[in-house]
Image (tube, rainbow, N blue to C red):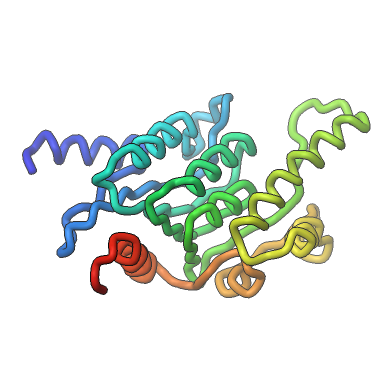
Length: 228
């Protein structure tokens, strides 16, 4: 690969947290996508925040689907949450990809990070990784009418329904975690650490990058019929 190719890889990694992993022994082409900091929606987040911009991620996911040379997708997550519509848009795109996908929760995958983590075909969380499940919060100046609460219930239902359909957890079980009053002193919700997220059915397995990459290779081999 020439210098221009290396420069392009370095630029994509630095600007978008994206890089193509294609130099392994088996020459599988795996797209790496990182979702870090705050998931940014239509409005720009504070300049001091690390963000994942959905207008960068969505075109990349479309490109992955259209590129017949891409064998799989590896998603690394360390996010505090963010814009619900943007997060669900990314999650729906990941879930609808035809190539195998694996996610790995590192520091945390909170709030809208939960559906992002479970959107992949198979999910991992490191032993110290955390997932925070809580109700949709109001921010800014909101007029508290009955229609406002109905709207927030609708948003919450979208999140619950997506997670239920992509993880091994029932709707009511997840809703119970979301409205737990016993854990967070000033808020509703539940924080799950490592193995707890697996026991609740949100995540498939505890593991790190080695396990995540190995699993993705196995899924690629199964899809292509290559002997393992």
